[in-house]
Length: 385
Image (cartoon, rainbow, N blue to C red; front, side, top):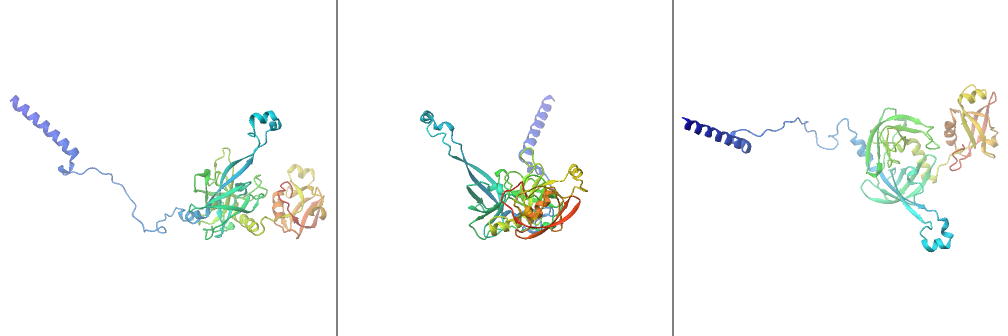
């Protein structure tokens, strides 16, 4: 009996071992299939780029604008100072001309936007400032040497041109259609990593008094803008250009959700003047203005803080010849109200040189109208209007 029980136990053990081996290596012999993960998949949609677009995607806007955004690489020669001891013959004997000045080259990068099929490119002035050599890399990978057609440091815009034709030019949007809260995309070459698209909304319109440029009327956005994005495109959800990415507010040097772009309306006007004249022509009357604070208003017995207090006059300037005096408060230019010195600057700059314009001023307790023959604004005169 004991022998039979031993044979039974051995038989069961061998059978269990065989079953384990077969179920592990050949489960199909037992009529079972290996376990699989069952997942849910969306039904295949219509084929083709147009039909496959999700409703919440901005791929069409990006696809439309991406070919028109270029990378700009600049080279700048930096002159090194000459060592003062080079005049000493003993110093020169031991060290030769090793410290005899010379120059070094530094590289920079930025972005630009193709605005015409025949090679005009819009970018920021600070991207190409003092560059001795400029190279533009197109979206298709080709590179071209670029020359500066003209620039406007006071608005931080510049126009380049490359020898190429049939380029994918961007479509200009309508600034009057842009509203706070609209979705926008920023396209550029941040940190040189390559073409990048970021998304945000229009946080504010008409931002000024930032101290970035002389003439300021920025679009503020929280779309990520980083070094290298400067000069790139800010587009709407239709892929149309609404701004040129220009600056960021940051404590670290990277994006913190406050970026600024020059509106397409301003950029287009400045670009057309640069292409036509090589520069931007603005009106000027030669006054230095000061903002009216509540303390100043009380000191001058002014009824309100609106307007611009004339603090100084350039001798022989249009304002001087017209009879405008320090202490006058400018209230309106050609019937358009002056809120502060920045508005005054913009209104006068928009006037054509040699034209006459009416200026409404408060002098003492009286309101006077003075016609002024507009002059041409000198280049880079930031402290005067």
